[in-house]
Image 1 (cartoon, rainbow, N blue to C red):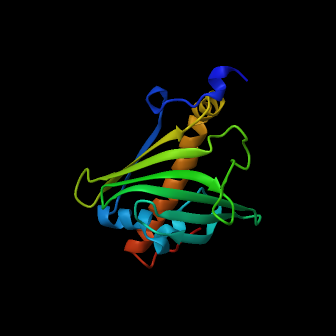
Image 2 (tube, rainbow, N blue to C red; image 1 turned 135 degrees about the horizontal axis):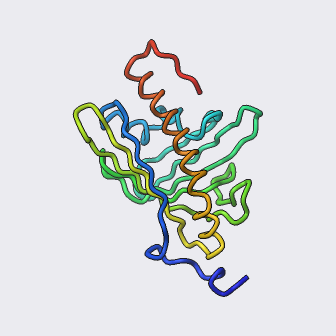
Image 3 (tube, rainbow, N blue to C red; image 1 turned 90 degrees about the horizontal axis):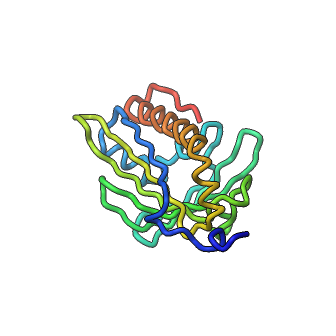
Length: 183
């Protein structure tokens, strides 16, 4: 390992991952879908269900959750919330976790950053529509972790597109209860 790989990368030197999606739902509802435990059914990539969710929405609070895959594999995650500006902005540190809330490495990548700084901005481009912009940056990452993150932007786009599709389906269902929810 080189010296630069061992040294954490400064946030100002990093290339963020950014994705935006416009939802056909009012900002207050989209905010609730991100910040109220009972609405977090959509959270995660396609094919997973939320098996456990505990949320304390406040700076210093956490969202500790377990995603279960179709084959029964559990993946735990955790947010440590830094900023809550209802209904405009949510900032948290996201990481993989264990059942007790301790930080763990990505289950499929030992060089994935341990922590990700996540900033979610909710804006209203027009009446009844909400734009969600997500920005991810590795936090306290080594050079190798940064390289892994940068190389994964395409995969993150695909993953977040699937998650946003789940959110879109969930928002349709919440606004029209006759619509079925597909997990």
